[in-house]
Length: 523
Image 1 (cartoon, rainbow, N blue to C red):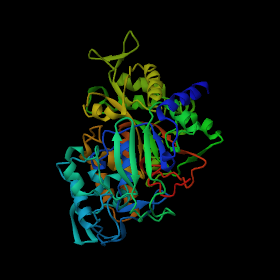
Image 2 (image 1 turned 180 degrees about the vertical axis):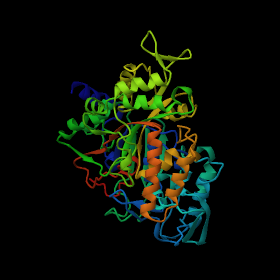
Image 3 (image 1 turned 90 degrees about the vertical axis):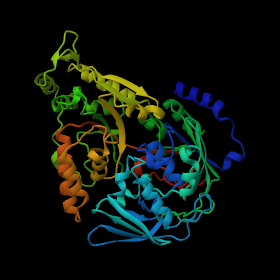
Image 4 (image 1 turned 90 degrees about the horizontal axis):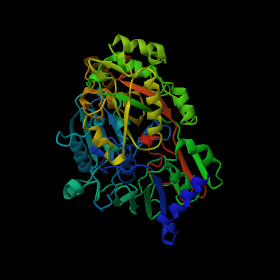
């Protein structure tokens, strides 16, 4: 406790005393910043949560995590062959700049997202878009080359938010850093990298989705999001009342924070977040499935969850959470922890134990590079697994990077494994995101190019019935799990912590965006 209260004192000097003007500012805190805030050019969740505050999507995800509800599109119809979606748009929406929102903005946004020039890593969320056109100022015809069973689900995501062409083109390379226009309840005001993002109220906003009691505008003049990377400092700041809300209290402190008389802690449910280590299968050290399986079965997930996460996670032996839509039961027994079998697999793969306890093959040590982002529990978990690996003769070379450069380091391709926590909505969401060969080199950082996987995913996406979709997603799950393309470690719980005086707080599960729009927040 002494360390936490010391952090409070330190933070007071940084944050300064409260003023009357600050009373109209909602103060949020997060641990990670992002390289930019253009949601079409990234997979990074620290970008997504801010984007969802100042930009809107055609449809929204209800609190249950699976029901799609109207948003900028007030209604839609789907043709019998599943290829043509006709969206009827609201006619009372405007951008923060004052420009009126029309079908032209939707057409521009999706053409930009799917353009070869942009190389958007999540362009697949738009489906195989054949054509998109404005039938009239408030009707969009969205034509697919083939059915996409998960389209509406994907249209709730930040990647498919609507952009203002004038803002994108006038700002050029500064779009998403110096400014960005949107139709959301908040407007982008300023960004100091690694320090603070400031959003201001969109006074004209009145089109909030039905999941909120307040349809807009928001009840605060500004939203200040401070970047506080140090775990203990975030705990100290919330317990000291320096911030109003955060979703990034370190999980090992959750029980302590729950006991604080001035704080509320709410768990986001449902919530699917997998922490995994991915194998870059084109690297010689991890190209052999036996090596990948050996690592996968050599760790003790339950001990990691208990010792590092203090129970605020569940051990993960599958890529998909068993409670998620289209989970495949056949994957439950593929990854079975067994240290002796792990050693045998490495022997069979030709990696023999050296005199120093590290395995060798053809004069090369089995010492894969493992990258992680320096935040939360990533470092501690990586070090714990490093210990398990040494027990089987594998020398993990773990290296952490600041969040603002971690993804650029990953893009250099010079490593064998990396780790992230991935939030997803369904089996199809995770599988299409990571394992389709079209998504090489990112987010398919495994460089997994496999005809069977691609075919199963294609068949699932094109399914016109729920049964067919579940069947083909199950086959894809089994394929990638049997290949041990990932080391699943744990499914992470997610919480929102807020001051008790802050009303209307309810965590949302969408891509770690527990705040989402914040329309019901008030003092």
